[in-house]
Length: 305
Image (cartoon, rainbow, N blue to C red; front, side, top):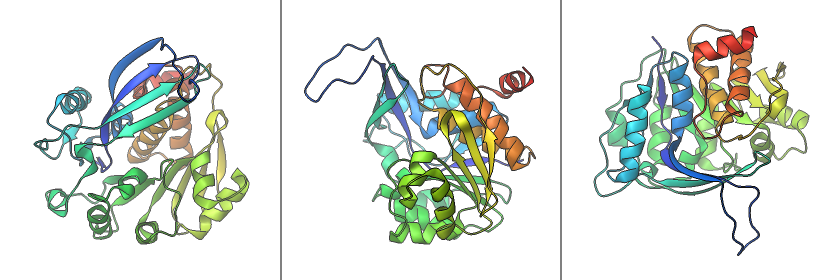
């Protein structure tokens, strides 16, 4: 059976809900605050809850946050490929969610910011696996080059999924030029693809993306409550979203990505997988917290209703 091999970073989120961010130097009270596993955990949890076996290939720390991250992964049935890193803890992200459902992140990476060729040499991907790559990984000096070298050496039968994230805005960097021809599935939101391509609007961005990706790369571009665009090259189709009352957008894109990959792994065509992913994202935004992806049965019930 296919697996999702996640090469990104599991961190711990300090999730705080507030009316709105204070001005610089200001102070506000949050309505709630709690620690949750986040980062790459969100995609993995979404995929696992929808029937796809998952392996985490990143590092994790040996302190209190590492313990929390491992406990969350074990609870979801996610396999962990590497032992805890001695002398370093897992990193932390302060996730601030305003009443508008907009969220703001401030992150500090820990043990998960490093990954060596030796770490990756212990992993044996299979021909039907999906390897998930986060754009955040390409920004990490202790991880990026080893990860790119490993990815480029993978057999072509293995599907490489790339999520640029909000910080990757340099398609002409050496690392991106090396990776782009190997990407089989691109998954991002609208602002990310706008930043990556430098386009003025979504229509232009979807066209300009063709300058960077192979023609047969499957593109998935999320468009908030409107749903998403799915397809290859100049054959992208809109897949409508679902109207819900959003309370927290944190983790919705991760829910979409994880459920979409699980759908493909279970034999769905991209349009059907995207419809399930849209439903999962719609459910996720009605809940507080980062890893709020529904399970397969709940997605089924939502679509049936």
